[in-house]
Amino acid sequence: MIDNTMGSDKLSNDSMTGINIIYHTIKPGGGMERYALDLIENLSARNIPLRVIARKISWPGIAPSSVEFVKVPDFTPFSRINKHLFDITALKYINNAWPTIGLTRVSGPTDIAVVGGTHKGFLNAVKKTHHGIFDYLTIKRETSFYKHAKCIVAHSRQVGQEVIDHYQIDKDKLHIIYPPVSFSSFSLDARKERAQIRKELGIQHDQILLLFPSNNHDRKGLDLILGALEKADKRFVLAIASRKAVTHPRVINLGFRNDMPALYAAADAAILASKYEPFGLVGPEAVLCGTPVILANTVGATEVIAEPACTRFQRTTESLTEALEKFLRMQKNAPLILSQPDQFMPQITDVDQHCSELLKLLKYKD
Image (tube, rainbow, N blue to C red):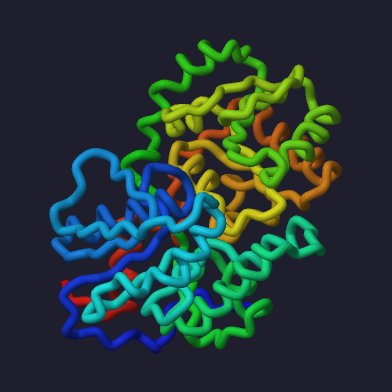
């Protein structure tokens, strides 16, 4: 297994005056898009000059004055080809006097390669045996990305192990730093709206509301969840936060929502049964709002959330059904509310501390 500590191979950049950040899409969103915005906002707030190289840029509001955005033009009408071309050309646009943080599969040297998941890990998880041309191109870029990086930051031990196992990378340059969560956005304050939202959704006092945030129902394991619900206690209700509606008697379709903290607080548990989930911010976000989570053991966040805040299950209908029964027993007398959420996941940090750890790797004196 991988040691969850930072090694001694810190980078030597004592004289640098700024940082390059490479990511193909700068806009509000989830996953790595949100992570990119968090890094840019925090580092620029420290008055660190940044050059951000991207192919799509839609900054929410007024962009920080210390950030120079460089938009790399698309050369074809095809998005997947343009993304490939971006990854292999982005390094041409950096400030060569500054270190570079790569958030995408840059085909060349970077100081820190941030890895939120690997393509080979994904293909194995979804059992895709026939690889197309874009799979091969992605793996080729990914292999170069890891090989040429001075330092690799993986967002979970699961991801770190994939980097070692599938790409033959020296574990000494690998560091496990879990993705940050906004402690101000996700907090127990969200519980003030719990009763009102449950009323709006028509949740009865004896019903148990499970929240399923999803941008990809197949990968997030919706079929498995619905299969388990059909065998589970009738009091379980599944609320799906997604643009894609689902027709099922046990489902409430919420549509796309911006009030996720309030929804987490309104739920009795958040749930994921993902085929591939390198981390899964749903877990820590829900816990910070005082709500426990029910997560498949394929979800990276299970590494850092302790019981009873996290009920784990193997990715089978039988195991999830047992997990729901276990959760029901914990809810026997009253809803399980996590009044001290921090104590269940001490390895999770806010954005500021996370960026400080990256700067330590860069030896940046800000």
